[in-house]
Length: 268
Image (tube, rainbow, N blue to C red; front, top):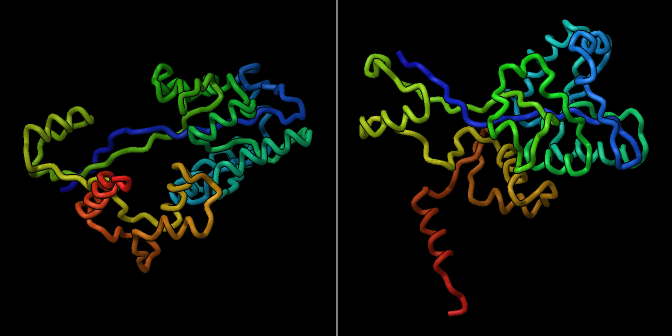
């Protein structure tokens, strides 16, 4: 019977917003000033707006179906605010601060490294609170994935809230003692040549048009993607009936074109 072990890969993080103000200096009073019981007491009856990318259906469902009910049990209303780009949340925060808003519309942000670094430089994040969360006891505080984000020291300004994972399927009738770590998987593959296979990256299986465009925005293109740029990004793909994409070129042909472009010397 097939089984599916999971191997940890990378972290996502949440940032808590500092109190909005017009001056560059930010009031970063945080739960670290109070006990957790005092934090829960103060939070009862409050509403928290979590701004996050709306294109991750599973992530959205997790917030709506798991986190929001759990928060409700503590008397807190958690509202998910979907955005097409996380930078939209950061822009809103900075605009409200510049306007002198005392009570902004963004409370919590699901943030990536690029936006964390920008917000950190602008003083947008409250800091020193992440280590006070009860579940911080389960986080390896000296893990580089936790201590730095995009090369910027986190300093308690964000909290990891999930890990992405690799998953692999094996036949327990043929593999009695499967590997349980990436290092163990490498050892097993070397000891059993020809018995381990995987989709070579980049693998676009199941990726929707929106997910591809969002991934492109998170690279070098940035959020200001024009319709013409979208056409360029989508040009190497066929769009299937379920709105997922499929690469038009095989990997070998794609690499042949890349090699030809690399070797081409117009000046010669």
